[in-house]
Length: 360
Length: 228
Ligand SMILES: Nc1ncnc2c1ncn2[C@@H]1O[C@H](COP(=O)(O)OP(=O)(O)OP(=O)(O)O)[C@@H](O)[C@H]1O
Ligand SMILES: [Mg+2]
Picture (tube, rainbow over the protein chains, first blue to last red):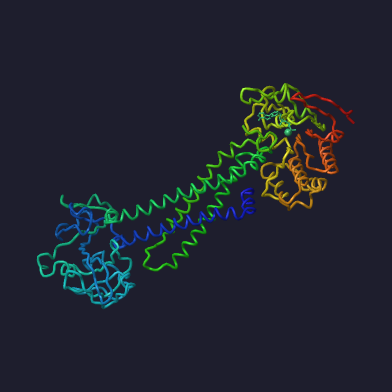
């Protein structure tokens, strides 16, 4: 630490540059992780909100909710602690100038997927819905009458709930009857028991008994099979992992150049009998200081930027993730420094002291 | 017992097809309290001798004993530790760390070695080397002679039993050069060290108990003062 710190103090500009690079890299990593997290939320919020363990879909559904079609009487709760019926339909809702892609959930008011109302009232009759509150930010209000694409039916917002987006579309919660009227129009009568899945709570999904034509999947699988979900999160994760490699390489290059510049200084210290181990530790300590400084500054910048970002940017910071990524950044920086250690070990003090400067 | 002893030591450098015997087979020993000068023309093998004696390189043949311990075949790690504990080097060129000020140069040694000079001894040392007012200065702000004196302070600070100095007075004016020799003489006799000084300057020879001359790698004792 002694050598490391004094060198930093006396070569401020040089080390400021390194901290600067690390700051930018960690800023980017934190921001991407926030973005990844935000985009994930966008997709899975409504599913997480169920606080459920699995869902029953048809075999042919390809693990997506809209493709699955069952009847209410297809499942009686065997093997589950609790279950709830769920019908779902994507549509476009318009109220005046406001227009939004939405996902309509048809549910039963007394089952556990019924959301808590944060503002306004719960839906009562047919045609009434509770809306995700991001719609409120887009200008929708309680009492708005929503025109829907592809049907003459209208819906009325009676209240709002929070954290309810499904595959990036804000959710409208209504009764099953509301849903059936929207999606089947006049022929409601013989289609009224059509739903898309059964949401279940259980300790063991294996115990849930269903026919061969149905399948029980974990809610996590439902999330991961949403269109675009895995692609998005994999792209962002890939970028983050790549940044780890980049920062290790940048650090390795910087420190290697610094080490090469200091060969004669290290050699002189080694001639005096200071061990390679001490010098190596000093380089590691230095890297640690620089990396921690860069990560902390990057973190502060990230939080500041996040505070000034428009709501439309889907960034959601997860501090645990950030802590892990920050630690990984410090770790890979140190890995980069290890690259210079072998150079230090190989320095021949004899050459460095200039007694026998002999270049072969 | 001799503090430093070389038994039948030589050093051969391989340079392409030809072999250069930089140091011909020689034996040498130095007792505590002795100040020894080594003179000789450039390229005669003075630095080679000094670096072998100080464990910076191994001889081709023969053995080197420091304080009675054979260091000839030790690994670099072990030799480094012996250099740190037993030997004070004053090198031909400056051996200061550019980003540490004078007092930090010494403090660095406290980080890696115990039992260095205490505060009072350090003050005396700095006083006699005339560097007391330079403790907060960085090497780049010092003159060549001041740097050399700091290097000497560094070598003496660890209280080594053997001091090896390669042209320690090269960048000093003659008054300072004599002062430095006085210093080394004092450290040698009062603290029972042994000091070997490589020099071109024949006037400095008067300070020494023994004078060796190397020509073409052959070490010969040419003068021995009557011990006092
Ligand atoms: N690493 C080496 N490889 C090959 N030859 C070497 C090596 N080191 C020294 N020599 C040769 O050994 C001889 C003695 O070199 P040395 O450095 O000991 O001389 P010196 O007496 O210290 O000279 P100077 O007064 O110029 O410092 C020289 O001929 C030199 O070229
Ligand atoms: Mg020399």
